[in-house]
Length: 352
Image 1: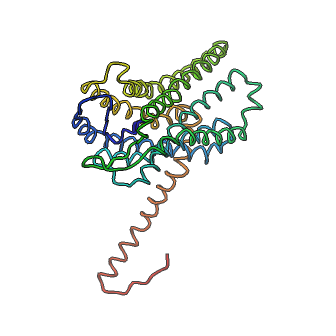
Image 2 (image 1 turned 90 degrees about the vertical axis):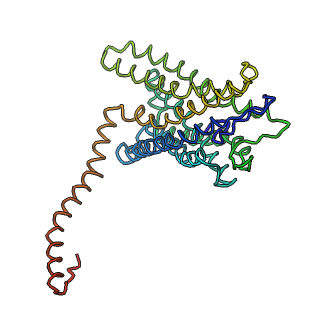
């Protein structure tokens, strides 16, 4: 779903004087987006659910980092819960009503913004742990992590309110849509405000925080004598930076161009169509970032991999082995019961 709520796929540019037919854009969306969204949902849900289970059952949430990782996974799960509805919307029309339109739009934005904020908090957490290690001993507590996480969720909800209020389901032409409907007299103000807010919070702010924090982290790590540990930490930091901006920067840039088409000289039908297609591609790319988060923040670590193996052996492999043993034990009993029925003798239940 686009920040302009482009799951409607009814891209209307009011600066174009003549009607601009965008049937091709809608047809491409109807064919490609449902399977892509489905894959994102499946892999993202499984990955983040594993993160939640391992953090709670294995790591026991003993540090601020664990708290932030848990909340990041919850943010991604909240975000992912809306994807099946957008997949159906892309293939057909909005059939879930006005209340669900606002509810799912709210969950989408809350999950999106809270995920961005927790990535920022993880960056600051790593900065404190490496650059200000002495201060971090007192500051990086579980209690501090829970308090800052609560504040973060409140800020994410507050930031999402405009998107929730202006979202509405109504019939537009032959189909029902779920899209933002700003007051006519304030249309451009709210449209521009929503875009600038997204770019500021989703691109500019994380970029500033990451540049400042990781510059300090790199300077500190370069003084570490253990080269193996130093290179491993530097590699992880660059993966975090590059992957986030690789997935979300294209979307924010295209969103900016799409909103200010007139300013960039793109307010013609062909350019508008290309921008709509670019919005679909970059938005889907950004949405897949929630599938990558478990890999970046969790499964890259050796300890977390060992927790994952232990969790699999304890909760999954053991149950599978028990079922195999039970099936092997039940096989002779099933054979005997069949023989009894074939001879017409009455079965006696053992109560097992």
